[in-house]
Amino acid sequence: MTEFTPWLSLFGGSLIGLAAVLLMAFHGRIAGMTGILSGLVPPFSTDWAWRAAFLAGAVGAPALIAGGTAYTIPFDSPTPSAWLVVGGLIVGVGVYFGSGCTSGHGVCGLARLSPRSVVATITFMTSTAITVFVIRHLIGGL
Image (cartoon, rainbow, N blue to C red; front, side, top):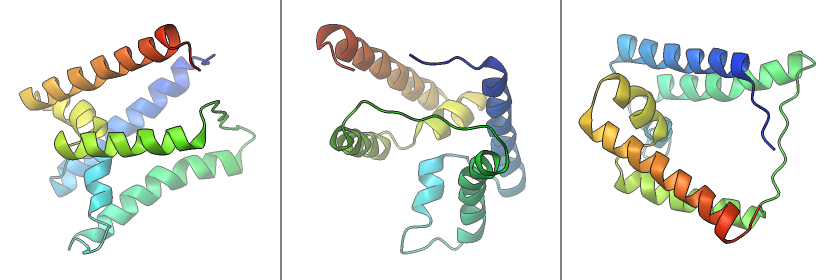
């Protein structure tokens, strides 16, 4: 069962939007996490410093909240680890062939009214809905 947290979700989404706007305003770059991460894989991009800072903030901020407050970030997955790895690899292939990830297309591309990002985001969401339906209702999985 998933716990719906509207205020935390609104706050988190607002911070993601603010980060995307600031990155575009100050660096002229799309806040696609996959593209940002790929610039930190050798051979390193010449603009690796902002990429490292962006990812450090994306990982560090939740770590500070979890470590500095009584708030815990619950995570429990009944899915076997091997399935998670395979799923991650499949997503990686999709990101490569789709020329971007959900954050690049879904957050930044839609905000720029990019037709390619609209198609990509519809594809992401449709694929997700079909996958959840098949796993939960046809296969009877987790």
